[in-house]
Length: 449
Image (cartoon, rainbow, N blue to C red; front, side, top):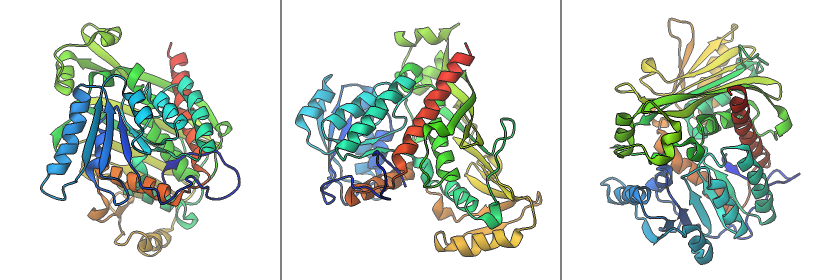
């Protein structure tokens, strides 16, 4: 259920590859974000174990190589990736001219990602890309053209939406599709949206058991993108995926009502901690006031999608409290029930789904969890706390964690690649998603100035 893009019309699935049995050989281009390494935490039967890396020299490449090496050398289920490395400033030209693989993986500087994608497509290379693909309206227009060319050449372009594989989000979607429990999605209002999604992230955190060192450019929103077009990509995608499952959407379905942006202050000491750099680089001086870096990584948007009011917000702090981590909050309001995901201290920072019934449909809820959904997700159960809001009991085995979701997304991509087909709604809904995020930035920038 991930994102492969092709403009199309009638059939339910569309041929994407002339040779569906072709083996995947990965070319990793300029791996500047740790997500580029996380897809290699697992080996895949239909992927060549040799990865061709094209990148400039520097700390980001070193971090990527160390991450792959750590996966290869771990005691439990070690991987066996072999890297062929081409270093230099002309890495893109080298990849295009040599073309030793058929899939480009790209995760790094978001301001130039769409140009990498366009070049790959023009050269007949499939694309497997970390989000966001674009960070402004100019990039969005380039993306539309890239989709058109990919369609003409039967190429896959795939967006890594890990949050679709989070079990609490999956079950929130599943319950919202059972009318006896949820009813219909409310229309909502700007003050009381039908769908609310909020994500809280932290600059300093641990990945694969090691403190995460972020590149200094990560704090330049002209390169990374503001928060309202970065992390919100996941949240907007979830809204479309949950509220309008397998439905073809259009940009005319989106009405942006309000949007805002604000900065998180970062001291030089905090910057040193998370980047390893001893001073602010020259390119960040534009965002520094009184020796404090102001990072516009926070954002909020209120909009309607096919008449349903939605609110999306992303917040970045420097570091999570002890024992905590990134958190997610979500609510879907139905005519019969509210479906709520919380990930706070009470939940031990594990995404947890609650059901607030607005009527007397306890039996319908119980049947949905213990009978209907058991076929897909054995072991689900229900607990009614003192507050009167039901807690969905999810077996621990389903909580695989964010890093494991990268393997699940990759396996979905490989399935599309092998089958040579995808659902018809993916491309138009991808267009709608990036239209929404870049439109929100445009409005926030205009309204806040």
